[in-house]
Length: 292
Image (cartoon, rainbow, N blue to C red):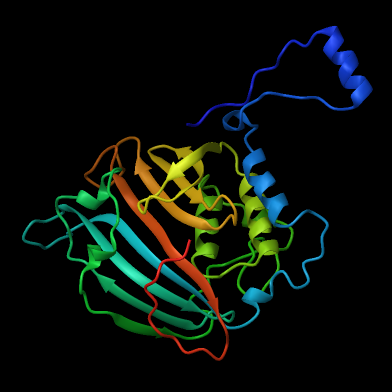
């Protein structure tokens, strides 16, 4: 459940004296009512405390490949001309991305047929391994920079360390920090220091609320990070221990400006089924196992 910051409490004089003597204050505030930034910052501090050296923490992205098995669902229209022009449809793709630090790599993908029933755009949709059946895989190769060209500082891009934010890179889109977080986490297998850096940047986003036990389409539970930017509610679900992205979701809360669909349609959903790092000498081979 999302909830605002906790209200202040009246504290008796005796408790104040005891607190002064012991230099500690015990607060029974539940985790679901923590101040807005606390869940992300607490997770970042567990991964990599502020002030610690990053040496060795980011070697995982210094070479080899970040390998991500993703499933994506999105709502679009049939366009024009068409047998059923401008009909809303749901499209789904399963892909495995091999991304090198220089932005080169491979994408192996397979697609389902467009679905005019929008079944996979329902909030209750669950994903099974058999969903994509025996669809054939296609392979595309990409030159340096092609897979990470949209990654800019201060985000920890593959092969780089975070830098201080630049005012000229501030986006007017309130959801841009969430979109950037998704971009980085679906292209690089981040080490603890870079994951913590990304969490701290995300924590600075205005208007975030939290769900402390959100569930994704695979049934995995994690920390839900929610931003309402009408007519879309953006939600990320993060692994509670590693801080890595499990899910990115965009759900309508009002009429869409150009798609002929309304709430509670999920117009985009990215599911990170698994992610791992493979060494520089390992060949790109299809991996369909699930990692949490």
